[in-house]
Amino acid sequence: MKSQLASKIKLCCQDITKIKVDAIVNAANNSLLGGGGVDGAIHRAAGPELLKECRTLHGCEDGDAKITKGYNLPAKYVIHTVGPQSEKPTVLASCYRRSLQVLEESGLRSIAFPCIATGVYGYDNEKAANVALKTVQNELEHNQDKIDQVIFVLFTEKDKNIYRELVPKYFPGA
Ligand code: ADP
Image (cartoon, rainbow, N blue to C red; front, top):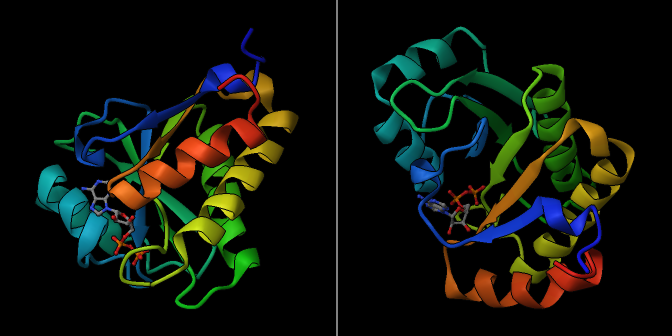
């Protein structure tokens, strides 16, 4: 039988801009004014109103998270977080923790994460996955009643294989 926590975890191999959840997470840069990778894809799909709102946020520190509306995206909101540009597990953990805190503070209940910092920022995929899973496990344990679903969006074969192996270790039954 699936444990209560495991039932909230889902792996998805789709483009994050197509996912209908309360909030998708953007692996942004400090300016919050758009970039390449998942950031570029989210801005293209959301439309120019997203950039307009991002300009009012005056950037974001590494490891912090800020929320905007989702505009033309199927997701209602976007939570923008900034990963570390080198392998700093405390900063990467903070991205996941702060994103979940912002979700809860906004009264939202479902979220989809890309593999933050593993693209252009070059974080080792398996190390990053362990940080992501440990942090989400810890947050879910403490806030079970506030979060319905956490989706990990796996855009590369490498991340698919890593998460398929690691998820059952952190969420037995998932
Ligand atoms: P970072 O600068 O934080 O490394 P990237 O955007 O370069 O951010 O990559 C972060 C992750 O997002 C990578 O795993 C990459 O494969 C993934 N990614 C890129 N485009 C998309 C997309 N459209 N949907 C989901 N994940 C994506």
